[in-house]
Length: 156
Image (cartoon, rainbow, N blue to C red; front, side, top):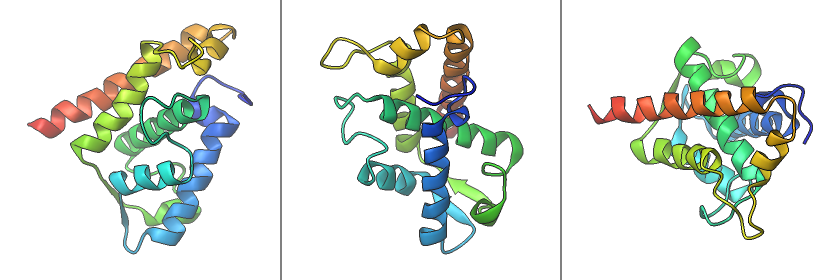
């Protein structure tokens, strides 16, 4: 795990998600918006997310957290990531309840420390052993609450 902070986008794997999304936008965005459900499906096909929640992997967890962080960044600033290069093309993200629940499930499984077949959840073990455990756990809780709030908001 190459990380210089506790947030998902402060890691090599999180920036791999950014690179993936930049390529996705370049190759798939015909207008100024993207569909979150299509991004999730593309991430599954490229191995950033598992095909089911039974497939537990560090990369899947960090990818879901990075996607949540990017979405929250968009909600807070109206811009996707740093709004440079391909990202400046995107002016809206269409989300659906199912996609938000998908991200929320990954975040919740990390929060709840749902174990893999070996009886651990690698992302939790790695962060628990770091000096930033409390900050990481707090950020995970923040992302979870923000995505959950968006689900509740979409139901109104």
